[in-house]
Image (cartoon, rainbow, N blue to C red):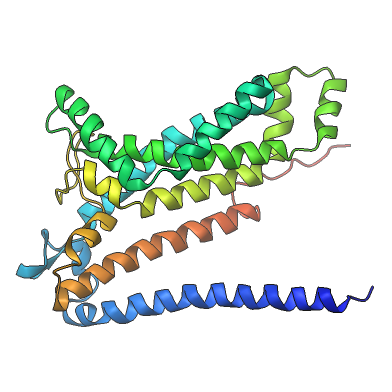
Length: 292
């Protein structure tokens, strides 16, 4: 089957855009590496994980406390937001009246459009004092998890809702013909059919949680330490870059680019794991052999 001239033009445009996107990502990585090289040549890579603290003016470059803060805030928010978002999508698709489901989607879309600085300001004025009454100082890992949960919830909720809506109606009719209950249909038919979209939503929300800066900077206390409880203040890698880049010079500035390189590494690792899982290369149970 031959392609029309319009189809060929479209194919070449799409290929060019794909090449441009890949080239931009590679240029960003190359830029981060080049900006990181001065401090890496002076102090090496291992000191970013073995120094006693983060104090670039004194020649100390330990990123581990901020890396732990970033990962803990991300994991905590994802563990809370993911089930809530998926359950809300199930409610909209299979349980809620049409009017209620439509209103709920509009509210979730509104949450997705709120700027992060507004979330941060709300967290600083309302959430931090509330946590401070329970356990001072209030600005803490718990506040970061709570604010990130609210921020990433629209991502997983909207993607899950779209994924569940794309499940073919014939699947639902077949389940009904077999006499499956509504929940059994959702659990045994809908979730397996929509797992690719649900997993995409999970990856997107993790990426946003890792990269969030302003709201986290405003509610987490910005203390460079490894938290021992949910009420300890933390500083994330993104917040550290935002706080110090304006006045950093020489090796200090280069060390902040190492922070960016670590964040880029986390994202690349996340995408690689997602690619492996999506192709079924791990978590795939062997099929039992049939017996005669």
